[in-house]
Image (cartoon, rainbow, N blue to C red):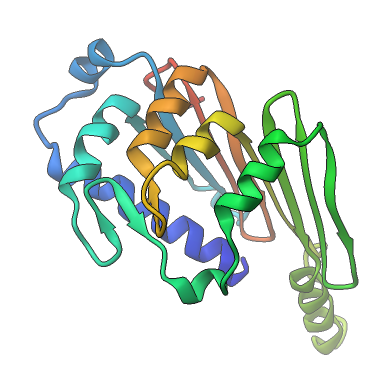
Length: 216
């Protein structure tokens, strides 16, 4: 799993653990009566043990708990964006351009290391990234193993699907902030949605929302 994928999963895990730690009294049955939409995270290991981790969080609970977490750049349900992270790029200008543009494929990059595709269709923003480096490293390791048989190299593929209304809500905070709570509310109003899938040599990861209080 590459560093980008590891960082994403670590952030998701910390957020979910924080939600449950700050709301220990909320049982699944109680939460189910308070909200129609749930965020689901499922991580399936590709190793011989085939371990599966399932995390389910009601969106309404996340909306209430996030403002109570104040750690590093996260405060009051918002995340501060340091200017150095965006390298003087006007994210809002880019967002406005994408929102008002016609549906289409905006970015396509094909190289020996990565394939990247960014497009918009029917009010949804799609980002697909394929990292070929991990497969190459696995193949090189197999060659260095003097004939030892290894599993077939697997590319890391990340697919992100986000409603444009959620993107708008995310950028509705101040100039250097992302509003996570507003994004969650917009996400809840959108209905059942597949958000993120990640497949690599170690794990399969799926993040989605629906009205069920348990993962598949």
